[in-house]
Image (cartoon, rainbow, N blue to C red):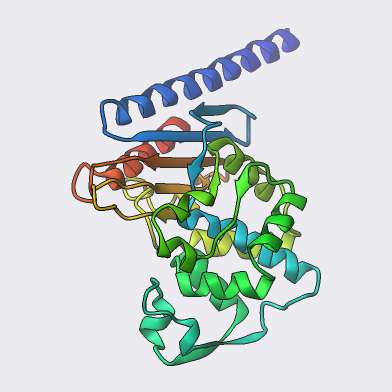
Length: 293
């Protein structure tokens, strides 16, 4: 009798899991339905191993999402003894280009000396482009970062250009690309402790959880944690937004986690009401509603 009850409960849970993923996929397709953009989406539920994918194997430019794997590469160097997060590093005035988004430059226009971990926080949590290029060169260049993330198990995460290069030409940004499924798999490796050791995984999680950019969590209770990285291309002269992205891990109040990757491209919706920001917020709410208890 106990065995039968256990099997019955297990089947009910499996049916619930399948129902959750199927309904969530329908809800997301409804949210973006008829909108002038293309969606790439992937999600992985750690407690069940279930996943969702919409255009999950298609290529999408990362924009600032690439700062997440750059952070992983930096922490891998830390774990190997190349750097210490407490190291003091100097960003000169020349490092703080007026042509790049940089909260560091806004605060210290003539340069500043900071702990390495603070520079990483500016890169990931505030998407500082000058901090990003400083760290790319400190690690050894984009090619070395690519080698590191490949060694750590990344598949279809392509890192080729610095922020300065990306900002120099609209077409260059497309060289830094990934797929929704590949990004979720990289997040899964992070959560399972397969990218970094426990201490450095905790550092990365804390920084991503403090991110101040994006709208993914706007409609969700503050008790739900979004450890994330965003990416935004701006619009070209035709009003086309090439990238409005958000990737990360959601931790619910009871500790359960899901990894997600959302890529919006070829959007003409602008940044006002009804834009990609609203779509990201609605998708964030849909994920929360699907898996809250």
